[in-house]
Length: 262
Image (cartoon, rainbow, N blue to C red; front, side):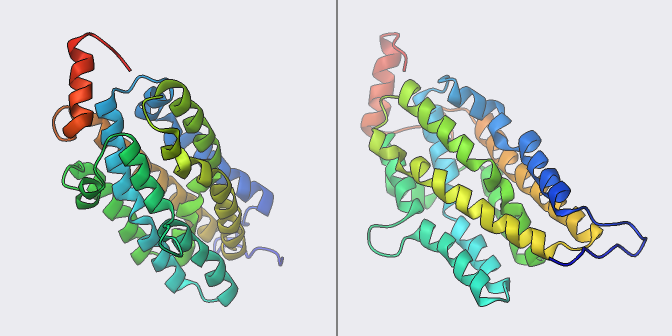
């Protein structure tokens, strides 16, 4: 690796180790695992309606991940980089009828008592979630590919979050079929692989102080997107915008009538 170029004002770029640490520090401080909604989820404090609301809202985000990855793919110049990035689209969309991450998320919704068609039509997704997702996709469409790749580095903290989430669901929400947790289990290894690939791309491309600062700012922006998404979910009355229907709703009502919990 050649030495990083100084900026026009003479400032030196950070060495690779320091740059990497600054990126990791962003997710340690700003990642959405610290959001009060996620904290309550992991302590087992969400009602079934709140959890379903989050699953539905988060699906709106998940279904747009291949879109942003396609935008990044189109902007990568080298075949080896495109081949590596293409795996992300395969991971989400699948490569055959068995499906990938999107299908696994739909099965999580079904395991929680949601209808997959309701997840697809997004009729109950809070406006703030739509706005956050559109902002992220738009960012990846308009900004240089370095910025879009750097924004994906929230994956640096994703594997630990997935492990925490699996343990929380198994312990606190046993009414959800364990088979529905397949998405989380898969992302433990996929997230680590994706973070390693994206970090290598960012380290190779961010050669000047300005480029490095842009990469850090892009990652901060992505953390804000994920935080805003949870703000929107947390602000909605669980019995209003994201209510439940059918057998799942009836079961919740029965638990409430007899004073039961989850």
